[in-house]
Length: 245
Image 1 (cartoon, rainbow, N blue to C red):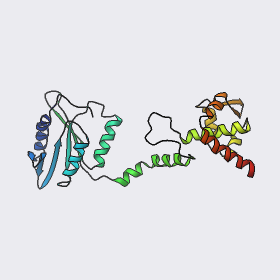
Image 2 (cartoon, helix red, strand yellow):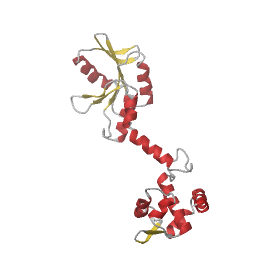
Image 3 (cartoon, helix red, strand yellow):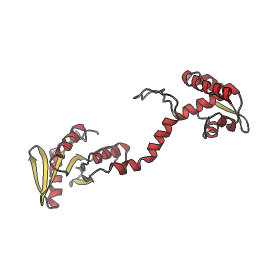
């Protein structure tokens, strides 16, 4: 998170102190290394004040969970949008760790305290169920690949996807047999997305000769040579079709 250079951690104290006092808690500062404690009716809350939500803060807060299940971290309200992916990811991490999160806006005369998350058990099964669609998408992508042509951690290189492999498969068929229909290509195993790939022609590899008939473009011939391993794989597959077909 972006640093708040003109704010001191001590400036976060009073707004948080006043907030919990209004809720009927007894609030104390610097108790056995804890920035703040709030207690009421035998319930103990530990609060850590920091200018940035970082790894050190998360580690410190998680250690406090040894003492109580009610641990909050307090930070200044972020300078970036709270609707951004970055903020949503940070909130997910805090919730995953079963911590509470409070932001304080020090703009104006009256600081604003917002409870973003309360400490609560994280329902991992519910989280997994909510992500079933993404899980199925990953499995489908894996099943659509016929080799491992990427290097883990790559950020500035083109990634070989199942879609790109499908394009290469179709291109290999057209290169070997010439002009073909989507139906004929599907019979060769190019899959249900064949017609969509030909029509969208995302890479410019295909040309429509006439209605329902396609061929490999000059660009397709040229760029197909950049993928010798996959071309060899699909060429072998097609040879087997010829042999046993």
